[in-house]
Image (cartoon, rainbow, N blue to C red; front, top):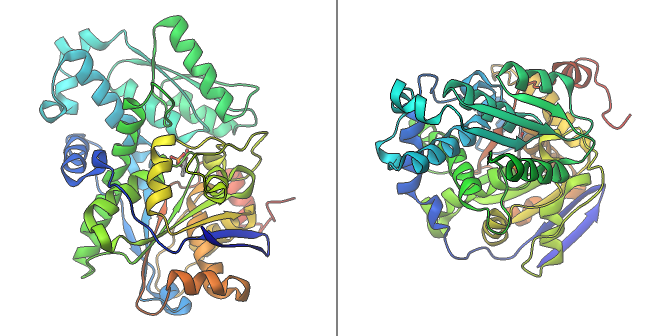
Length: 406
Ligand SMILES: Cc1ncc(COP(=O)(O)O)c(C=O)c1O
């Protein structure tokens, strides 16, 4: 690992080379199967891929796309993709059927509903994942229990309760809330639907990671309609890294040795992927403590060990940044130039774009920009993974221009 630079509060690592064993569970056939399941849902509709033409001109790149997941299933975030697919796979296992033969309609038949109605699904979440799980289980007539880390937003708690779950805020950080969910499941015979893996618990998080690929696949189709065959640069934010691993693992499978140049972006107080890359010993490394950041969805200290491997092999750069980078992304997306479309991006959704805008404009980040080869031919994609899931906080940052560090 080379070129570790700490400057101007934004820390980054950039590698000379990428490559490794392609993650088979994210190959094109698997992704097709995921997308077909999502297609069977009434609420399914591809989310918009917003082309920010004026911003691209201003920043000197060919294209900037933002995949706007705030439109996903009416849940204001992408997470329902993983929740629905993983629960569908769990139900298939219980009912002993192949996912290729399953659909949302199939699970909603009265005789099937009767067989699954007593299943209880439990999870820990900062908000978005829990809301997705609650929404999916309620639709299927099952129950869900959700534990949130201390300091979680009351608005997000209410949204999970409104989606039908029994939800509460604990006194622990995200990683400890996960341990509580696990313990409660063991005591009560519930099913853990967690968006991260640990030893002996891999199938469900892998199904969740696969679930996220629908948005990556839609984005490729949408770019093709715009005459673009592949993105050259991808910016992905990470909490435990399942989202980033899912998208990057799929693109690595599709594009092979032309894998887009991918940068992983994290909040500095919860930069476990960056710290793992920095350690450079092949292992995931943890960040502990309060994980205090406005990017609640990214406030995770323990990488998913399965997707960490994908990020280790196929990401080109790892970035650890202060909260203002995300606040800047929220404002840039909320205040489009010229005819560009406005995108409502929440704290965890905006950091990729916020970082991109600084990367291009800031002198101190020039070495990274050059290493990434960002220029007038670049086609960039960022994923806005949430809308204003905490509307009061969104307003403070976007309308009042509050500095998130105060
Ligand atoms: C809005 C949002 N974006 C990104 C992420 C990061 O996903 P992961 O934890 O898989 O890295 C999350 C996780 O909760 C999230 O809620």
